[in-house]
Amino acid sequence: QGIGIILDYMKETYKDIKYEFRYKLPNNKYADLYFNFEDGNELAIEFERQDLDFEYWEEKHNSFKSLNINDLWFIKMDNDEDVNKLYDLSFYKRVVLNNVSELLLLNIENRTVTIARKMEYRNEFNTVIDNNVFKHTYKLSDTKVLSSGEFVTTPDFNNMYNEANVVFN
Image 1 (cartoon, helix red, strand yellow):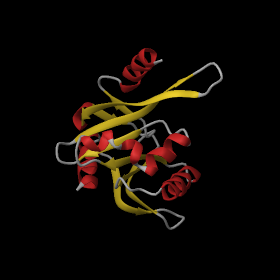
Image 2: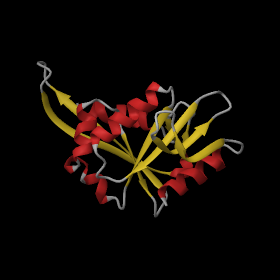
Image 3: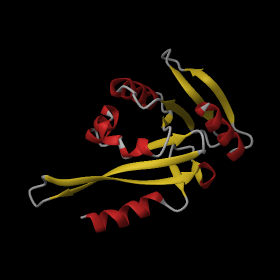
């Protein structure tokens, strides 16, 4: 159902977009959704469960990268409490440790996307003193997926994060 929601969203956003469902890559891996944009960019969108294995993600992400295919990953979120349990997810911990910027959590029931990114407060010795998860939820219709794989929001998530990070630090 999540893949269908994302596909419908992309077809509505880009009326003439070329796409394939379960696209087979030259390396015999599959992309949940594959898009070929008029600007020449290619984008794979993956929709995964919360128990996603980090090694699987890393291998597939690197595979897309080696083929010059941008990728964007959505994680299934059943309810708002799932966001509060992010620290319990081993995938989230590994993503944070490897400095991937943020997670996109898709709630398929109400068609919202919650973006979550870690904030850290470090002392003068660069030791982490405190951390927190900054998150904001958007209606899917208030977002845009660019051919580069960038996820653009209204209001802008990065600006909100930076403002909150100044206060947190």
